[in-house]
Length: 451
Image 1 (cartoon, helix red, strand yellow):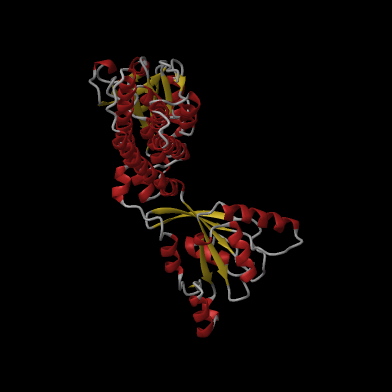
Image 2 (cartoon, rainbow, N blue to C red):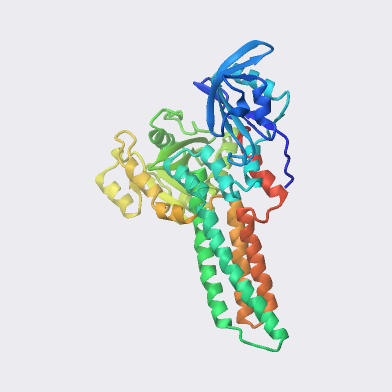
């Protein structure tokens, strides 16, 4: 990736009214550019690094604002360059006026360019750069904790240890190739094979964290599914504790899906209220039902909701769309059923629920999170949190499986060495030792301007 050493600036705080707004400028000319518009007791470049200075910003003799300026001198800054942060009053008008002055002698930063420069200047690794983006969008306790641990380097350290093992194995193979050329043979093939198996097990365990990692970051996707008028929207509203969905006694009120996010025991849960599934001649309702099927197929969990009426045909359709393990069966309007009816449904695995009395809602919430509990220790040891990382680990696993097979079939150490090199390349891509410009650009483009 090409490193541009010009000076960049941007507003770092989001648009809107607040107590303060923060602008950031980074590059060789950062301190000089700010000193031309900032007036304080002493010249700006005379202050030491990491010093906050109170002063005023003027343009053409006209006061713009009283501000607090903090300077960070290279290399001891976020980007590794000279960085200046300007804290002004929280009016976007004031912030934009100051930005216009900075842009007279600097360039507006691209999305994520400050973090990109931090990566290129080796202030942070690639997984840590991704963690910065995750921290910005963290909405719950565990999404924040996962991002924080990754920023602290948990995944990078785990990958580096795996790379050390691969380097050791590749060195042994290179020595064996040299020994063969000299007519010597002291190669411990059994020892190498055991090392490959141990590393393969570690990588497979890491790959298994990808599902939970993605859920921590993007949320557990839960669909409410069932025939019209079984109470899906009532349960949706009960989850949100607000009247988000329209509830009427008339079937087919929800014609398109609704989506809302809630925090549940520290996890982000995205709930989808889908259109009631039934045969219909209404074209608009048909589109809603088609969208419901799409949402269902991409869900982690599906609440199959009934109200005591016949449901066997609907359930058979549902298990054609998703794994039966993903389905949580709910009998709604339990307050209207007899004890005998409720017993029958309970024996068939249904959770009793009544939105009138809130009966069963807590049980549903607990069941949703049954198989995604992740400990703080697991987060500390490093987990995968995006598709890029998951794909790279899967490539490394495939290469190690090939290496194990070539050892088993005695295909020659050259084949094993090649497969181990491929595994190393895949893991190096995760931490940014080897990454194409397209991958790097895609990562940083997802950031906001000013970060």
